[in-house]
Length: 457
Ligand code: TYD
Ligand code: MG
Image 1 (cartoon, rainbow, N blue to C red):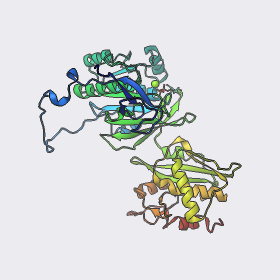
Image 2: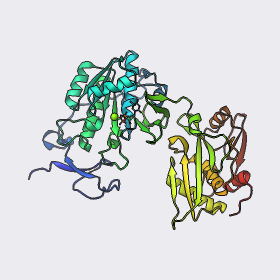
Image 3: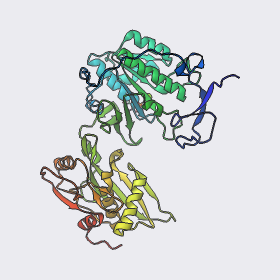
Image 4: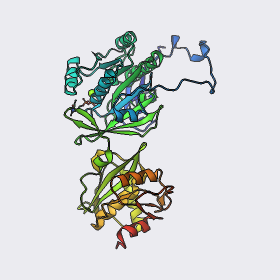
């Protein structure tokens, strides 16, 4: 009987199945399974155990390696996100929504890197060389010695890179790459996976750093670069709201540096501009106290960042009132509303709740709980909190306020930006003194009394 040569692969998680199904068993995603050519199983389809391999040399943990030599792009926000510059022979994936500015960022990085004397090849599978030159002119990079190619054939690209031997190769994007030995269309999981595998192993073998660009759509329509995340050393996400000019580059995985580090950029007519002091940007236009507006003293990666959180509460005409969140997790908002209701007796039934994080940044820290709770109650009571205070602390389901890491860094940043008091939990340990008056509370009820006095529910 002929062997089956196709397999069914989930485009969301990459799991392979024997037959098609409407829903992937592995990740639960609907309508994500596509038919694809099976990956080769080796010589004549034999299992690995039946043919002898080569013996591998083993080494000790105590073996001494030369320290990592990093090369800097000269774009401070990018270098910091990478953990201090580019590690030779590393593979980096830059993911993000189409149109967010990935090609712009990488062309700027390529230009600066080439101007600093490194050899850079930029391969685009999406745009013609003339289009890239037009963009370079707009970015004032026409004189940068970057080598360009508009190509999608992986075999030709690898041969060229092998001959040119650059320090850095940028592949824009991995979804457009086409490996001629894989029997499916560009953009499918097997093509994306094969191309990423070939490029990353080539990078290690030949000592060339590669940057792969990957488009991610919100509904995972395109075979996502999720399967590629495991293969590369570093995964960066470029995010931001379409209507906002601010863009955040976030390290979600980094074998050579801290994850969760962010770099902040602003998209201008002449390309991306670095934002050196993001707190000033995320604080919005705050001149006088307003109800529902609160400043959260957050930490993103290694950096403290102050962010304005805004809440609006209005009577709802709907049977199940609206809960709208921008920049925060909606499940977490539901939890804070429930804790406010059952532990502090402050209900939001019959009220629409809108929560917005200013500047287009997405917050992931649980320490934002206290600031969110303060903003919600301030909006509900139409009571403005002092504009010179910051808030941070995690709220547990019992209503207790939990300890938060790096409290001093948060306070120092607040002091630097002219704030004079901070509200947080009694469980926060402060070793050194700052010029900020710290008001601590044991639980949510005490905190709300400190801020608002007695509240009629
Ligand atoms: P692009 O880098 O092509 O996005 P991606 O590669 O992630 O798909 O960026 C496209 C957007 O950026 C486009 O809407 C135009 C805008 N842009 C500027 O605002 N200023 C600039 O200098 C450039 C080059 C692009
Ligand atoms: Mg692009």
